[in-house]
Length: 512
View (cartoon, rainbow, N blue to C red):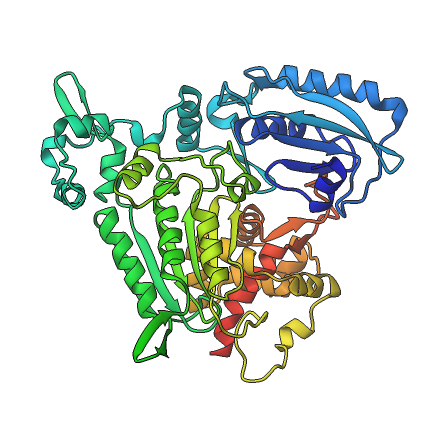
């Protein structure tokens, strides 16, 4: 893809746009994040509206030297980006192109590995936690998390009958030698331990669960049924599929003398999407699980962990495969649950299209993988169903900037928030707190901390308000109006698209 087309698509995991040369530490963090993730380009000379502003051509060489020095002085291990200029529409932009490194983790020298390792999540740089740093170390050694030994329990303490029974059904006895060859057990100092893969297959980690819910309407505000499934991974798969099928429509057709029943979405597509979620999800970061939501307009499957850093969505649609959990994936292939590497996503799409459905929406959403199988019924672009078509009063009073964001659609942001800020959402849906009240005030426009405090009727700015506003900014719900000068006396806070999406979700309760 040519550079101009990449710019038109906007910022992403592999692209960052800046109007002018950013501060030294921002350049270093972005280069480090690209190196630790999927590589990428930092382009200077493009504004926030994706318009090519260009740079002063007399400063190109000085800027190149400065950037090279910043990266050399700030990053460890050493990173060697390609820095070059490109003429687009008669204007010059500067490109810092970084390839995915093989000496991960890369980090800021001034902060050290523990605090200074950055990764790319969506279009932002994020500080890597210890689990992520450990995963980067594994990538350097070319091993996966599920290959490592789990020392918490010995192999003799485990009941592996759920796995042996599966292999018996395909006439492949699972003896000790087979367990070793499949990398399900390893022996160290005379003691045999399971690998993480075996623990995952048997469902022994607390986060090896799937949460299912049938929601009323098109949002998650009200559910009519909810289940959480644990146990071995095969039982979870069967139970989850049954839950979905029990909550979607079954169509009966008479063909000749016989009646044929068909689910409104292809069972093969549903099963493929569920297998994909369970095999390729991120098992490293605990506290996150797969979520399956059934709405009036779609079946949504969200699994933790974006794509492996070595591939992009374009690669996925072209049939390229990269297993995050190599041992688990190999077991599913052995059992015939995976037909052919790299074919799953396209099979989901083909099955839905052949049944006359809309093409499923399949995307990497920051640190999650999202599959939306569209149900065959009229689709509404509203965020909740109303008895009439009248727009809610609070939406009518929004500034034009926020109305424009509303028109663009907030579905992706809402799905991210339901995963990332689930606790905050549940609290606000029960009873509005200071968190929700501040968001409501910012609907009218940007406000300073003092203006928010006054509007809340506080005599002076409370410590709780300071905490809430900082948390909202960290959560990406609000942002500074003067980001380059955080402590400016003219500093104010304004609502982001994520913030508007959050407020839209919590306002649903007013319609119940």
